Image (cartoon, rainbow, N blue to C red):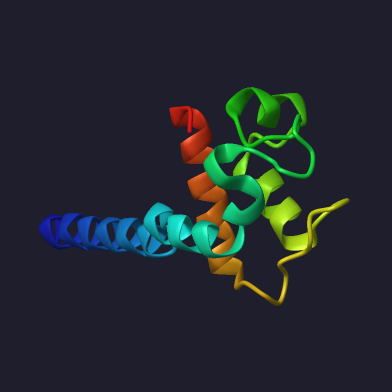
Length: 109
């Protein structure tokens, strides 16, 4: 019985681990979506509309945009000159873009 319980716990833990990663953001997909939808204004992490509000790490930190949640909110709802992408991109696409932007900012674009 002990052996069965140990095996069952291991199986559930493995399943939960897999299930958690199945919905993890896909940075490679985010790069494609970024290039198709965002690069016109944000190529190389820059911002052609508001030069000081780049996607570089220091600017994201300065403006409180240095988290997946903040970037998702901005991309989803838009703000100022930035259009909302809700309805244009899926929630998963927006998560992927946010992960891509954050990973690129951490790497220095």
